[in-house]
Image 1 (cartoon, rainbow, N blue to C red):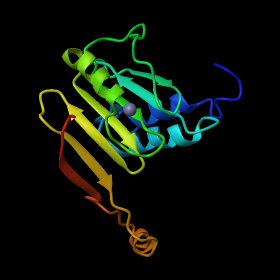
Image 2: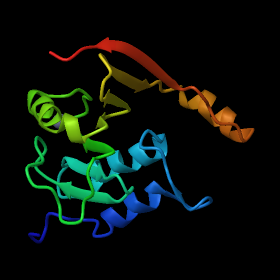
Image 3: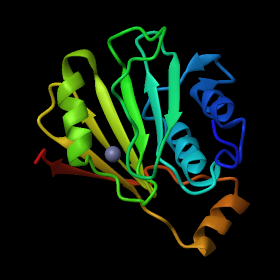
Length: 172
Ligand SMILES: [Zn+2]
């Protein structure tokens, strides 16, 4: 790795910590919001500039991580040790919009026989592709005003169901 690109040398450790639930010692569901949030934060802050981060979860729940330019992470090579099929391919769009690009669709088509799920993460939103589903699903986090959030926090409450689920985002 070139010097000066990685600002946070423990970025893979932080993503692994978020993946392994410290209470149960078990792996999270790939949809776990905290897990996706950590990947997004790493993508925004761990490098010299916001960079695309890719996390591949294999069939044994092992993580394979990489980062690239803001636009693209090469997915041509299967990392050594990865056990197919891929459970989930996760990557970020550091510019903020969570949708599968043309390149992403090519990757999905190439891998769909050996991949169960793909998630693209943007700013407070993510999109999910699942094998054998006709539609991708788009999730956006609704931000509540700080005032209300502060009051909720004062009572030790958390907002649940803070996500809007939109269906109907079809493959182009
Ligand atoms: Zn993409």
